[in-house]
Length: 334
Length: 296
Image 1: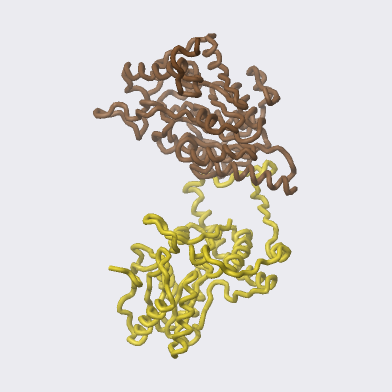
Image 2 (image 1 turned 180 degrees about the horizontal axis):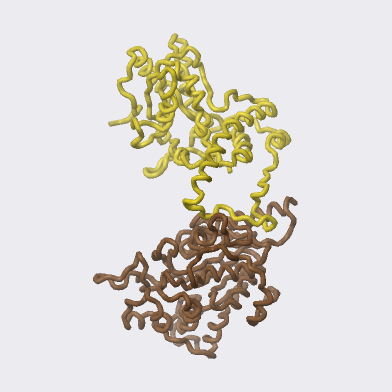
């Protein structure tokens, strides 16, 4: 490992290390909002010497109502697709001011927060461009609730196959409106930007894993990227009390592999590592899909199709979860 | 924030040449807008613009427009001021309590909705109104420090005293029009030119002062405002509005010309003046808006 920082191993560690809240009361996210939970852990992991840049999205609209902002960190809004430019600009400005002696020389984390629409769709070119700016230190966090959630659940390219949104309803003529497979965003950022030293996927249901990944990303230097999958009760259609459970199922069914790439080394983490090692078996995707009303119209054949795609990812991809290219079967080579 | 805009016609269809609609698009969202007509003025106005934009009484963005191609892609001789003078004119930018830094935990540009937008817009309105005074101060200090005096910061009057017909325009169109004014004056025609520098804040008082007494005001718009009250250009519409409460309202004509970088020569300007002089003699305007040189 190229970085040495204290990481949390247990829940007890976590509670001891991250006592202060920097994403605090005052927000008005929905009950069971996992994106808010992600921000809470990210803020805890980052600590007080941090500047947060929030692109338009539900985590802007819901968190920073005038006079009741939830952020106990300096925070600034940027446009929907502005995250990449804003983080580079902020990090570059800090660097320049410190070099000129106009600010005390210290480590200040710069974190850009964007949703799936702001990051993977509208802001993709800027985020990609930002990740080539290796002179500056920042983290881009993509909170992915698989829809445009604050404008009443519209489809994005991150909406999974078959899911109902207000833009992809199921009808008599077209049962599956969202036929396009979800983009592999973290992998795209890692493979497409070889100089980025840290890229990871995470989920709020696994806070130890998430916390450690944020700490590593902020420690390693240069541009870094974390993609979290955030169950959204309103958009996905489940009771808010099951948010964590749905998140866990996303990992346990293998739909959401948790991984990190540190200095070019790919590693599955937490539950996903245990799946890969055979320690635990992947649950059928049906257990995840049938818990959410956005998949209620799927037939058994549809679910089999999704299962087949997920199996393919784990069994046939060159690197499971990362590179959707296949070697000649059998793989690994005998 | 200061933006130096090389005015260019907006796509589609594509064009490299000048048209002012690009900068005018932001005229109603709180930008200060200024037009220049030489490279020297572009440089000087940039320094002035920083001074105005960073003044705590203003804190609004400034857009400096310089005509695309005619000004941005041509060579001019100009003086670069020494650093010491610039430092004297432009104090270090101090964000004060709005600095985004861990030592100053603030939220910038949060979601305000209907609760506060009205109040915040009113603050911007106050800032824009303050800008008039701040601009005057900045030009005054500029003249003191750099020794170049632009006179009235908002407008540049050219031979407007005793003029029957005054043409109004923004940007490099001033050059051919001034030439036309000189040639027509030599023939005894009472014509003049008024160049608008600051379009936002709009120089209403100066417009009334210089234009309300003349017979015909002819506005050359290197832009067009589709569906505007008299289907004319943006400058024409604004001047018409500014003169509504003037004691004497002149006749008004509007030339839409030079779009997409088409040249307006001094001969074109003389033609326009002749049309305006004709209207002055007749005491009426036959065609209010003329698309100058349009092929139909």
